[in-house]
Length: 107
Ligand code: FES
Image 1: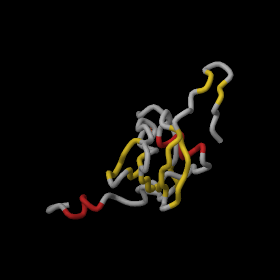
Image 2: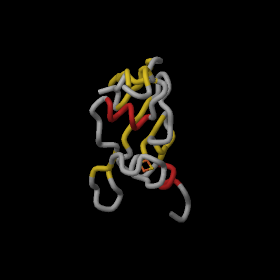
Image 3: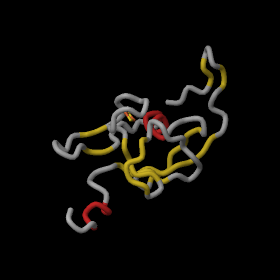
Image 4: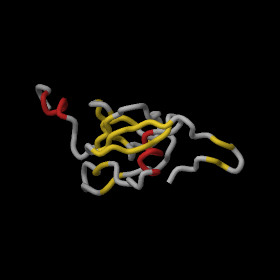
């Protein structure tokens, strides 16, 4: 659900964009963060926790925790609550550690 005409703030969402989550196309607005766009489209599970393998989602909504980390346009661990959505963005859930960590010597 998108609040397109807020009673106090007025019409805020006027630049529609498309983005992709798990290969499926969704609608959002340029003024939204990636996390807000996902929530507005009914997606609440952003990934899995490393240790207990439990669902992660939006928690602080202000860039202070790491609950909303996702892979955006191939970049791992992006704070989606602080990142604006853009046309054609490809968003994937963080389901495991990034590949780069297992490639390093000594890890
Ligand atoms: S929800 Fe806490 S950093 Fe995004």
